[in-house]
Length: 400
Image 1 (cartoon, rainbow, N blue to C red):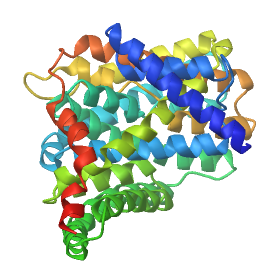
Image 2: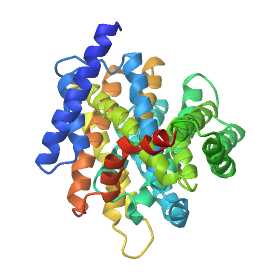
Image 3: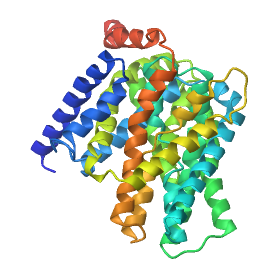
Image 4: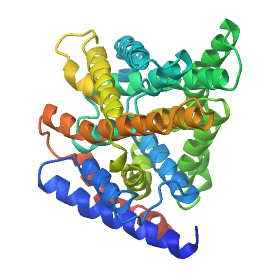
């Protein structure tokens, strides 16, 4: 990709994000839906100004989702997340089991071999929490009990999805499944979350105080971003999802005395990169690939997660919100498809079917959530962040 092509792609991404996001909000739909549709317009199904498979665009999109989950973590109280952990675990496990078995059943009904059934079942399991988190944040419902269950369940089923991906990928490569390999993969994935929160909670306050003592301009901003990227990198190296690392970083920093200041400082840069992810997702949608198998997989993906949401225990819980919030699929599903296609186990038609399933779940979730969630007041905290951000360094500069 040349610099001129890259710059044109960025222009198309930001114009599409703002234009279609604004149109979506004016007609009562969430901005993220507009960004996805804008991606379709400038991507492979439309003007072809954005190549979502270009490495540079892909990396920027991944950075956007990493930063979004970092901001979500900053807005999440660990105590609330722990309080709903049993419900989140039930929703996550039930969602994985129901969708995996549904994909397996479809494969066998269509007379595909067992290894193909494994890939189709695995591709349906993991929720892509970025879309749901964005809608919850934009509508002011991120602190609701349902939102905490969704976030907790998404972390768990993302870990399970990564475990399944590792194990099924090993089978595709000619390896064999054994209890030791399964236990080792699971221990690494769940152990990372425990390590990140416990060790990070010990380290973060010392890091914040050290930055304050040094008095470095924008030091807290850079230290926070570096902390998030570091945990995301460690998560990736440990064999789990990078967004789990950045989310854990946000959870940890949210418990420090400078949490609100950190949130205020990182707010603008996060909202600069986040639209790149959603437009890139839309740009990858090829409407010509629509097929009946993909629609069937999408139906199973929706029904399985909604059913899992209705299993969440608790009085007064809006279980439909939980279930719908778990619907969107994303990068893990596409990785399943890519591994299966590259190994020759999945045909081009089945690869497209998984892509169609991702497309449908990504598009219907924002609309369904907006219909289910009451129109809350605009986020006062969000407005304060936007108003205060430009003034951040003035007192320090004046003091100098």
